[in-house]
Length: 111
Figure 1 (cartoon, one colour):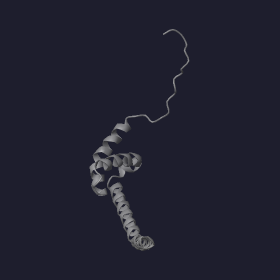
Figure 2 (tube, rainbow, N blue to C red; figure 1 turned 90 degrees about the vertical axis):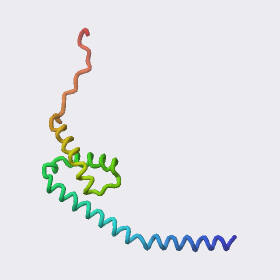
Figure 3 (spheres, rainbow, N blue to C red; figure 1 turned 180 degrees about the vertical axis):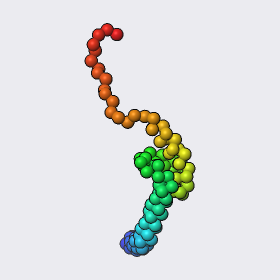
Figure 4 (tube, rainbow, N blue to C red; figure 1 turned 30 degrees about the vertical axis):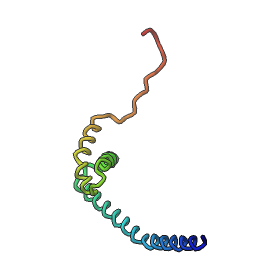
């Protein structure tokens, strides 16, 4: 029984060592991916400067498109989302975003 426990511990130690040795590679890949996405976003907003004021709409629509197309690259997602983003902005431009008065709920007469 003790031999099995010792063997399990050795195996566990080797697994932990392999995982720890891969951490720098994983972090490097994450940083590279983040920088690539940042550059893609900067190019997108440079091309479509009218969308800079609507970053919340862009993010929301992009999130929906990404949910429907999880395997597309970030660049392809932006291209696919662009018409939907523009449509959403057109819809929201016609709406007033100012505060409205809440109607009184007091009863003042007959129906």
